Each structure stands twice: as C-alpha cells, then as structure tokens.
Image (tube, rainbow, N blue to C red; front, side, top):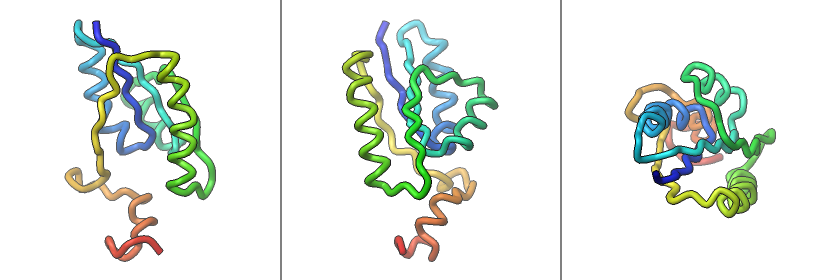
Length: 121
C-alpha cells in the first residue's frame, strides 16, 4: 500500500481535494495522510466539518496580514520535518486555482487583485 501525503491549506483547496481524499480512503492501493497548513483557519475548518475530513497533521500557520513569503516560510518550516518523520511514498502536487472554473468568487483573490486582475497593490 502506497502512503500519500495530501497537503493543502485554503477553503478552495479543501473543497477540491475532498473527493480526492475520499477516493484515496476507499482505495486498497493508497493510504492518505492529510496535512493542512491552515492559512485560512476558520474557512478550512468549516469545509472539513461539511465533508467529514480529519487532518492527520495541522501546521496551523495562520497569522494576521501574512504575506506570501510568510506563508511559504512557515509551510516549509513545518512540512520538512514532517516529511522526514512520515516518509510518504509520494506527495502529489496540483495547482488548484480558486473560483475560475467553479465561478465561485474567492474573496482572498479579490483582495490581492482589486482591479480584476490588475495585479497587487
């Protein structure tokens, strides 16, 4: 059985990863380890409750007014020792953009790009 570590941290990512985690849970070939970074703590917890997801590991990196550099640093700082400890067979990587195909607006993306994609302020 292959051990996969699934890592995500936002509401949009949790919504899109929920069916993947469910399929991995049902599979006889894979054992998922769910790791959340939780950069959007409250929103992420709501999604977990709706889908019945239990995180095996929670990096709990949320901080007010965090920058992308802050998020990246805290994620890597928490994830590196966890990867050494868990030693998963794989950590699948996917780019999950919020709101583009689902047509559900992402308030965090709107805050970063207030001019409809004109770039950060």
